Image (cartoon, rainbow, N blue to C red; front, side, top):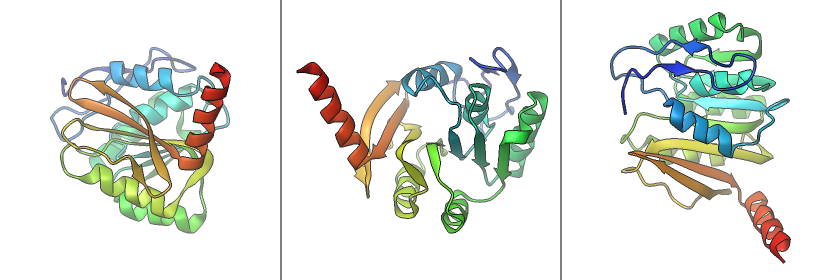
Length: 204
């Protein structure tokens, strides 16, 4: 994947607006084609939804969600360089009033979210590839449970970094491959089972 691929907002209030991405390989933004696929799979209507983006990088996914009407986003990244880019992107697109940015490690942020009792409709995480951060992050999400019952957790990760079929109550619901990238979709096991029964019932 090209490291400095130009990014744009695909749909919603800020449709077509360009986002700033850093030069170099320290930050690896979600490519537009993967982001477009992601938002085609997720619900069309984001109004009223609360989003948590971990390892946020440029804020690309949260900004897309805000453009599509999300109520609020919390972006987490330990890098001050990434934080500067996120702030600039939010400022340029006039989305600051619905966004919160925490500059801290993801583990600490998830513990803080749990203490505050915050809940989210969607958690998106895109940790650095091939550093075994995906599984560890999913385990912590399952342990602190900052999710509404119908929430979805989406991990973007390398095909070389396998994820398990479940982490605590989180159950792998879908997986899509784009070159060397996988999008893995997790849901509450109970919600995933209910959705499966509903699909089976619809076919009968």
